[in-house]
Image (cartoon, rainbow, N blue to C red; front, side):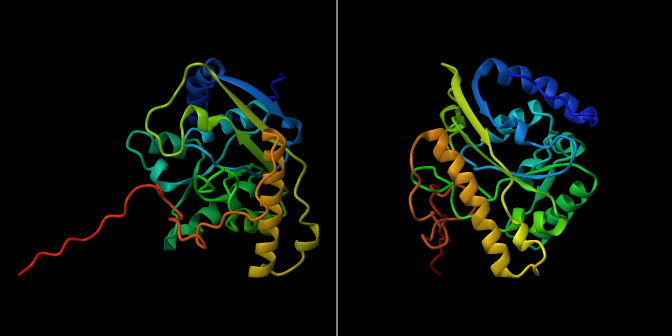
Length: 258
């Protein structure tokens, strides 16, 4: 595998993260990577992928970094606000997403600003680990489409598989041995040309998001050698929690009798 280096400066924070994590990932995983040349190294892009495990941001960042792109994630604010990590991740250019709050729009503005600086941003369109029983991509949120259509940046789809064998969804203990095979595949830009001159209506954003999720799903089908379900899993329609651990029992309020 040929490592593609970026001409952009990493900065001290990202340099520290890379120095610590990349050697560990090289030792702890086996890699089956394809399509790294699809990632633009000299121009910005919105890079999207499916989400299957708490550790797949590390695995996917490894793929992106070794193919010449500095990883700038739209990541949930709870991660970026962890004590002892917030200053490092913030300095590394990661963009907080305040999910399902009034501050959610801040992530959009941060992503647009990064694109305008010539940086690529990494987005999980599903917004959380998939709830699909077969771990196929769910219906997507419109954030990635909105960023791409606003800035004119291309959307590069990617799919990943294998990180869930290292750490199952919402599990606490990883399984590091034997080394797990991590597969990542990137594809051609999603065709959004006919949508770029249209107003950002809900219908346009929905259509763009559907195309994005179709592209990610098709790449995952190639990796897994299987066919995804004909109907994409929609957590709202299935009345499944859209954020947090869907398997965790909901807390019920206890009332005291007077």
